[in-house]
Image 1 (cartoon, rainbow, N blue to C red):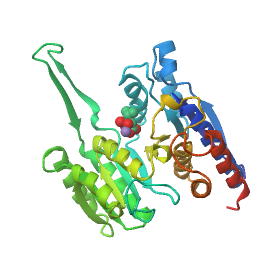
Image 2 (cartoon, rainbow, N blue to C red; image 1 turned 45 degrees about the vertical axis):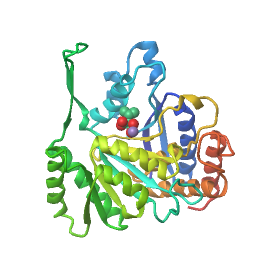
Image 3 (cartoon, rainbow, N blue to C red; image 1 turned 180 degrees about the vertical axis):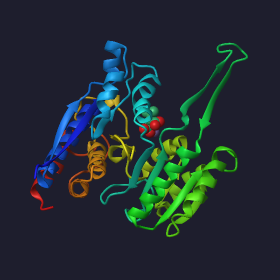
Image 4 (cartoon, rainbow, N blue to C red; image 1 turned 45 degrees about the horizontal axis):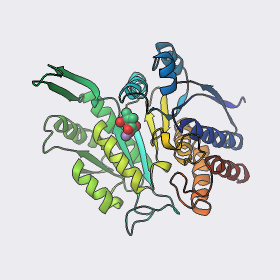
Length: 358
Ligand code: IPM
Ligand code: MN
């Protein structure tokens, strides 16, 4: 039988993106040999430098080409010389929207050997997943200015919540909660006491869909309160589902309690299409080219990618390698504090994978 072969689009992007993606690819190659599949990579030069040269963010032809891939592996998008919004909207959000990656999945997991800023909390307390709606809400770009630049100026930015968009996100969260099979508890995070239209829709939809999942316990928390509980009692959470903006905010908090941006990975998922996997930390211009940044977030994004491609065993092996290096090798997880360079961390994980029996 011919080996399985995955066609992966690689967008190293800006800042430290290329450095961490190189380590991710190193690890994916190592695991592909162990688990007997092939990867075929096509690199795409997108990001701030490219925009400065060409004035283009993401062309229709590049987008079309990406649609033909099995997955997209993304480093980082963001450049200090480009005004905010252009690259984010032109590349990252455009990809999420055009490829209809309506789920943003972010595991919040503290690995043994990693320090959390939460006192008296350990790996057994911090292990949950946030499912963030990824194509609607305040990110939809609905709104505009009225009388811009005058004393009467008005700026409106609306949150768009469709029944279809909310329902597919909530249903996905129930499915993940069921498949994960841990505490079997799904928490809706909203703001029903103030956003009485948007989160009324979310709450009603949540109740409706929950009827299909009698085995899953349901819970609700306001977004402000969930920030408090994530710090005080992170062990309460199994899976959290929320809208785009709240999900953006609480997953940065989540990244901090799991040890920092150096190890936080995320997946932008279209269950029926092309998904995209990224470290969530951004381009970190300050560390660019210094071989100092932690590649583990990108490596774990690779794990998420292989799992979504059906290579669960390969994903497990990557996680094993990451766990080993975090526990036995690294002094810290922050850039410049690891006791090793970016490429040494990638080497250690790849070598571990090559040497271990799956
Ligand atoms: C993230 C990022 C993006 C977002 C930015 C860069 C547009 O913060 O992936 O969380 O807000 O979604
Ligand atoms: Mn964010």
